[in-house]
Image (cartoon, rainbow over all chains, first blue to last red; front, side):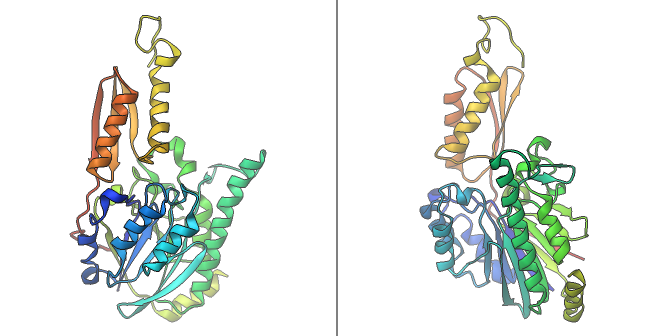
Length: 254
Length: 94
């Protein structure tokens, strides 16, 4: 069994240093890794990300993160990514990492993702340049996720997890106004997950959403935005699959 | 909410509650707080705030901004501060 702790949307600032640390220090007892599903800061400033870095440094379990839209607000994603990486966190954007923890090889593929909406109610790559770029940006994010998951399929992992900030499915947005769904996620992320294969998809972003969902391909989705889970993090116990079967499934997906 | 007549609070374009709420939400998002997670809705003659915010100082700052932006409008706040405790159980994924 692999024990996955996850939280998103912690929105830290100078006044929140130390708020999550006591709970995070219990992680080695209950989890094999911690996933951070973006929106770690309020405005994406280096000062705010240093608060996050201190909060997660030296926890005793690997920490894997993606950025969220708030972490981009100050237009310094590379700088805040570097701050988090210096603290030992794996920060993914169209990338993957394999962490060995609790005797398992756990693969995580991550991207911030973007909006666009869900099948039948989504933006199209048409019209004004800014509209086309909106959809292309979302598509590039999803392509990066698919490629990263495919690479994990070749990496002999016990489990593959898709980590995003934006939602791959509409189900975990239930509770948010329907009108803003296209700003909360994109089906392109779910299509990438279902095409490449994954054991679990974790996202944040939708504070008023719902924890549980599933892609149409049957991959479990969990919205771990902190206001949704109402805790410092949630823990999911994932059964370890037969590694040979996992690799065969990855090949079958190609 | 629909109102008519210049004597009525909310009658003129500058006093229209819908637009005042929209401007408030813009200010909450773009200002010091970067707050996109607070829902602001007109309820009768009052305004209701709901959502979860990261800290007590954030909540106080939001309420201060709301009272400033919506001066003269009764405000009901149901904002809660994020819970930072460890989970008491794990979910078993079959």
